[in-house]
Length: 115
Length: 112
Image (cartoon, rainbow over all chains, first blue to last red):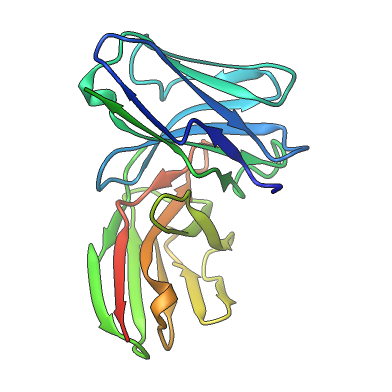
């Protein structure tokens, strides 16, 4: 389809391992966002990309979290040395551009479980 | 960002009943959004509100942007079983044009 896609849909890892989560935004959308959803909670903003640059990384919970975006399209969220509290659903969203950041379209998410 | 106060936390209703849920914040927002999330899926945008006092409908859904800019409500009329899901409010603060602040969600269950 033409929506936001994310992979993998589920990831189970052991504490201390690194994980990479991938997001493919809607074609033509220049703005991309990562959010985290913990069990029973609303979504927590992590990072925003406009094109390949990330003007706001303030939501990243620790320096173990990083994200990059190449070619203005696909983005990867990397979590190093995973901890059990990192277990959550990681959601990616995209929007048409900097003037339309309110209309964010979400992918299905990656459910991360850290054992 | 701040977390919005969304209520009720859950609702269990019969098909055909009307539903109302609301969100409040301690600061003003420029935009209020309402999303629905089905199990295993990402949130889907239902209604977007851009002006204080604005009342917008989308089929059986109606939402309003509070005149104080610190609250919003969502009404669902004549509920049907497929309305089941978690409804989230979200808002954008004036100085943050992209980081949505979310409520914790209202879980809606509809019995036939």
